[in-house]
Image (cartoon, rainbow, N blue to C red):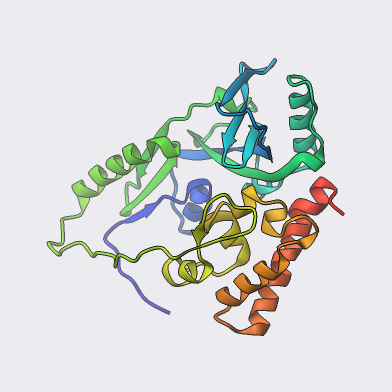
Amino acid sequence: EHSVTAKMVVNCAGVWTDSVNTQFGIESPFRHALSKGVYLGIRRPPLHEVSLVLELEDHDDVVMLVPWGPISMWGPTETMVQDVADGFKVSGEDIDYLLEQYSRRFRKPLTRQDIVSVRCGVRPLVVDRDFSANCYPLELSRRQEVALDPVRPWISCYGGKITGCTRMADRVLRVIAKSVAPSGLPSPTSPQTDIELTDFPGMPERVPSAKWCLEQEFCCTLEDYFRRRTNIAQWVPRMGLGCGDANLPVVRAIAMDLASGEPARAEHLLAEFRLQVGMQVDELLGVE
C-alpha cells in the first residue's frame, strides 16, 4: 500500500467518469450518455483499397467499409446503453444487423464464417446531469466539457473524441494552472528502450514481443497482449488462436513469457484466455 498526496485530481476515466465521481462523492453539472458501437472485421477483398461510406435509411447515419491491414472493418452500430458493462457485450442482434446491412449493399452476402474479429466499444457522450431523453445517439453532440468542482481540487473530463484529446488536455492544463503553482522541479523522463519485435502466424508485420510488453508496459494477460498491445486479436481469427487452435503452441509460449516462466501461472493464463475466446467469439459466431 502507498499513500499519495495530490494538489489536484483529474478524473479522465472516459466512460467510467461518472462511477469514479460517485465513489468520491463528487457532483458534476454533466454526465455521460453511453452509445455502443460494433464493427465486424472481415477478410479484406483483394481490391479494397479505400474507405467506402454508405448512407443508411434511418437517422441520417452512415455505415462504412474501411480497409485495415489484412481485414476490412464493416460498421458501426449505434445503440444507447444504460450500463458501461452492457456496452462491451456484442449480441447476436448486433451481428445480424451488420450482416443484413452488408447484404443490402453488396452482391455477395456475408456469413458468420467470413468474420475474422469483432470490435466493440462505448462512446461517452456528454449531456447535462438532468438529461433524460431517449434519442438516437447521433442526435447528441460530440462536444467535450471540463468541470472543476467548486469545493474540492477535482477536475472531471466529459465527452470528446480521440481526435480532440489534445484540445481537452489544453483545457485541463489551463484550469490546473489557475489553482496549482508549478513545483519548479524538472519533469520526470522515461527511459528509452527499443521495442523488441517478433513474428506471429498470420500477421503481415512484426509485433512487440510479450516479454517486452510485460517489462515495459505492465501487460499481464493474454487478452491484453493480443487485443491492446498488438493487432493480433483483430487480424487473426479467434483472437489469435486461429482456426482449430492452429496457433495454440505459439499462444502457450507467449503465456509462459507473461508468466515469467512459471508453468502453473502460464496454464492459468491460457485457460482464462481460451474461456474468453469461447464466450466472445466461438459462441457468438457459431464456431465449432
